[in-house]
Image (cartoon, rainbow, N blue to C red):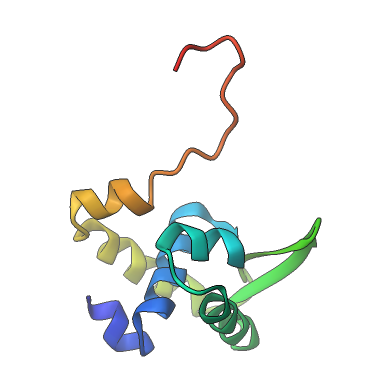
Length: 110
């Protein structure tokens, strides 16, 4: 994957693609999705927040990360991620990027 080369590793690329797809996320959720160590995800999130790509806010016991809309480099980066997303294999998209985010109606059958 080209993103791994650009950002220095697969964890960085996965964190960026996750936030591109879901708009926001927390370290535990990202680590669980990709089955990678929590400390690696936390390190990447901290690096991106320090660099100004992400902002964070506390939500309960977690810290929720989202894109920093004030950073002028975020828009071109998101465009690159959007183009990269188009070339991901279907099975990878279904496995990592199609998680249900809204609650299911109680009377709705599975």
